[in-house]
Image 1: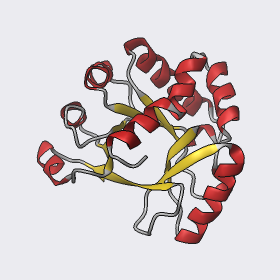
Image 2: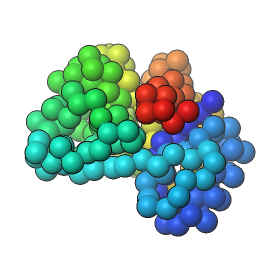
Image 3: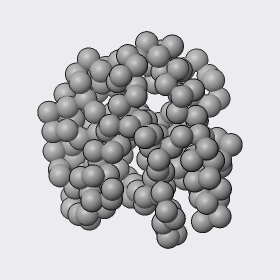
Image 4: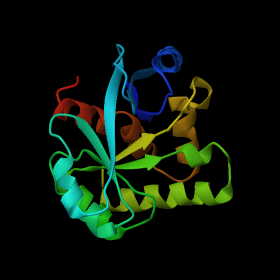
Length: 189
């Protein structure tokens, strides 16, 4: 039922350990960034840093592709491309959120900053979620965990997001509905 579409294991053995822990926690699948083979219940995610619009031409079709860039114009343009499934964004940009909502491109919010418990990271995640919610933009929560111990339990994550003021159904959709939509679009499930 739940998906974490970005874990970053160092090797295939760590990924195997992560999928075991994920199944115990209630995850249906994990997306991983890496060049090793998929294991049952995992999906390879391609992550691209784009410096210019020209770089976007190199993104392949048929794979799950996440894009990030320091250039807001590149992000705003990439939201409109069908081969881009998610935009990893770190700063609040209402124009980007509105475009993502219109084009049904997911905005990827990395929750790794919640692990250290610093107030700045918590505030930022809260603001990102609330801006996305106000524009009804699809959001995917990712943990960016490198080890099984760094993974979030989906139920704990839902409770935490609720405490931050994110409506429960929207928080749940960020772990279930939107990731499933991206995987179905690419024929992965």
